[in-house]
Image (cartoon, rainbow, N blue to C red; front, side, top):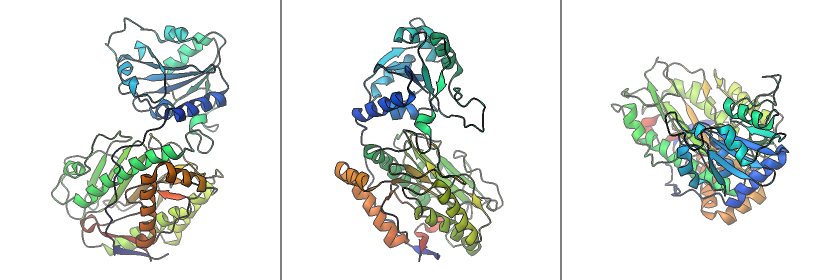
Length: 455
């Protein structure tokens, strides 16, 4: 593989204005499937401000300040238990629900004169002694982490305790039913969800590329971050703009600060909206640094290309992992991926990942994945990154997208053509680029049309 820097102007890709909605029938299907797979009398799905993705997937509701609990019963019951302010926000749910107040979920110091005890609220909903309950938290523990993998772990302890008292039995953990990397209900999604991911990916990519194009020496990091043009999209991460001079350590996770950019800085920028994250990193300079190109840029982009041309339905996650590392080794790279070279994404930035060393878990049609290769270690003061979102779709799912979401499908086709004709990346038919500029990597931000290509 021959990686060359070439000037490629990014077309004026259309940016979708509004996200397509998830139909209520889809939320009904997801919730019913969860109850059916759990096999218990009730499924209790916990969420809070930082851990809202499972609730969003099942009913379209996210807590803004408080905790919340979605209770799904085997008899068709669908009840959303919220605090004082959640009652107001519950109108955003896309699934028809009963809304019940439990002021234990409200912030401290707020009124608690109507429904102060979650225990009594659970009883009033109809949870009885002898009922079995499965709990969905925000993560689950694998067998090598605990001797009790079925015990609820990542959920508020007060919720587990009150459900135990009400039923007289031990709740079991059902988080894997949603979040397992291949079998979880969230791991494989349909056309409507992919269309929502595309909305987020197009907008995150455009926001990051505006920073790449607009960052200049003399600006502060906050000045550069303002170029994102944030318009109120729901966030899945704190926005990042971080920089450092040659020889300085760069924390690629920190928020923008008042540091002034200087020529030659390493600089990284990232933002995530529900459904996608985009990141670009490079050097703030116009003239290429040949040592950086040969030692970092070419090997790194070879790994990016390998990732895009390896992922496909039916490919084991371990094969992708090995292919990326082999591409880096063959190119003589002194770095490797910091984490997994790719993972599933949802409203939470990291759902799970079948792409792990030795993984036999197969990628599947309906998966939405991040190309996320973080090169580590790099010389202090240098950074490089090119993170974007793709979906995998077999022929039937592609036909459904083209039929039900023709504008989304049109943008996907334009991206595929651009990647093939201008960047030199030939994708499998099942690989759908969702971002504003998948694999478009300018390593030198002051000449942002000079990008990596395959020749």
